[in-house]
Image (cartoon, rainbow, N blue to C red; front, side):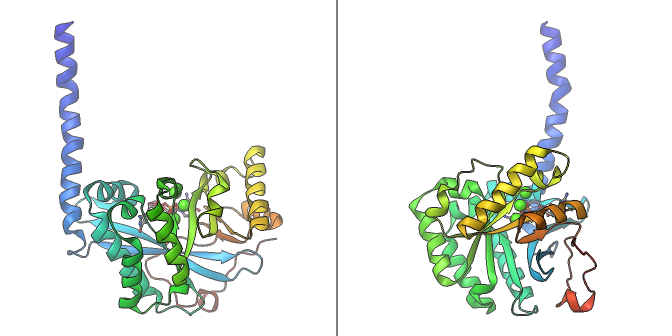
Length: 278
Ligand code: C2E
Ligand code: CA
Ligand code: CA
Ligand code: CA
């Protein structure tokens, strides 16, 4: 048994070492990624469902690593959060996105994701205000996507920050809705203007009657609470048609447009939207 234990230990150790070493290497490389221009942003379009008009773009961060290639944000954003690198990273994302959005028509909004770690480690209001001043983007054009875990911190600080952003004209969207400890009671305490129904619910629309019931209820709730409802991860015409029938306000997903590094200033004029929803 002793022998087995030792063998098992020796068997796992190199694998754990490799994972740990890769992580340390990524952490080190991420530290230099901004300076070395390895980071960039993709922008994914969002459309109004009733008229098919472009409403805005969501900025999504990308890392092109010199030897490992594309590293997904689901890998490096958590590393940034744990190491505090989310502060310079978050600042770079906001500044880059706001600057880019200046080239769009003035009715096109910019959505930027904020991590719960940013609320823990810095004054998010000051950060956003400073980025708006430095870039010259109107506050009304900026939408910040937060998750329920930010809301769950539920501190006076988070409430205060979101209220001040709201007063400034910046709007708040609740991302990944339905995956956390969803309770709509926070809508009375936080100035949330938009709810983004998580992709996992949209995935099974049409194949799972329960998700259809959940999604149509969320849409109905949004209507009675005067909160804009966006469905994310819409991949098929069938999903889009159902959402439109229920009165969902906005859509985002591969069926309508993938995240892209360069986006036309006016995609509706440059290449008419050929995605007609019945
Ligand atoms: P998210 O905020 O929920 O972003 C939406 C994700 O869904 C993006 O993945 C997008 O590429 C993907 N997506 C959009 N439409 C479709 C679709 O029709 N089908 C499928 N299968 N996927 C779709 P991505 O870019 O890999 O980002 C993953 C997550 O990483 C984001 O989820 C967000 O939580 C985080 N993230 C990305 N960019 C940032 C950022 O700038 N700051 C922070 N704090 N987090 C970010
Ligand atoms: Ca998002
Ligand atoms: Ca989301
Ligand atoms: Ca997500």
